[in-house]
Image 1 (spheres, rainbow, N blue to C red):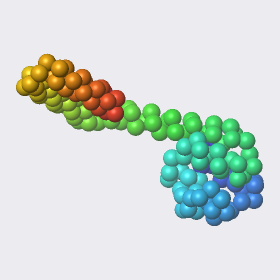
Image 2 (image 1 turned 180 degrees about the horizontal axis):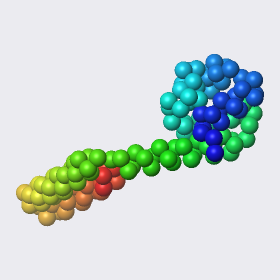
Image 3 (image 1 turned 90 degrees about the vertical axis):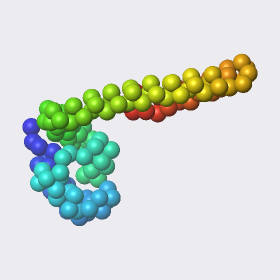
Length: 142
């Protein structure tokens, strides 16, 4: 299978479109198109491939197939090449997060105990629990 860049170059030339015309029509620089064709830049995401295909008058699938294969290969190489030190740092960050979460829970329990009436303690506990749930949903590491 041809690389995305070579496929793009062939389709662009057969459509009689210059790099500058293609770039202007999809909202990127002609330097970017040149870098795609030469392989200096990885294949773009699907939305950009669709815009390129539409401008060149070719089916989306014709160009996306090579782009998708190249993007998957690029990601596979990146995943396999993650240094061990980065994996260790991620593990340490997760442990730190757990310790911080324990400290927050202890603070919540202390605040709840210091509230004056049982009703106030209950309301405070409910509000803090709602806040904790909301924070967990926003946290990408959870």
